Amino acid sequence: MSRAQIKFLRGVIEPAVAAHFPGAEPADIHEWALITCFGGRIVEIFGKKRMKPLRRTSTLTTTELTDLIDTITKQCREHGIELPTENHE
Image (tube, rainbow, N blue to C red; front, side):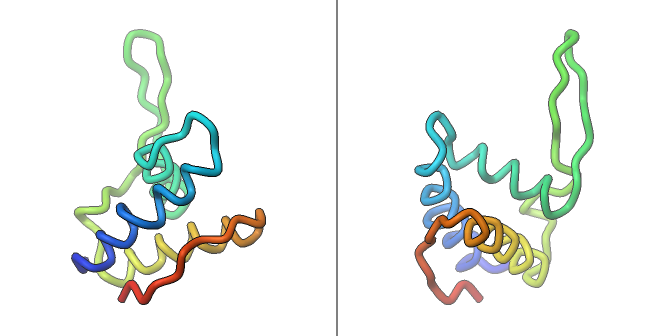
């Protein structure tokens, strides 16, 4: 994992995506991206179900982090959302 990639993901990409979804926060985008890219599992606590990602950013390799950023970027392009571009590698 590269610090530059994390900085780009958390400081640029996720806030930019969240701005397109009223009520969403960058952390929501982060969870969605991890689940979309690496899968998720359902946990139930006091009768409330919640989807949790199978992987966390801290365990990703540089290549996997690139895949995560590319997944977000591709989804956004498919839905007409323009994101800031930056060399994140």
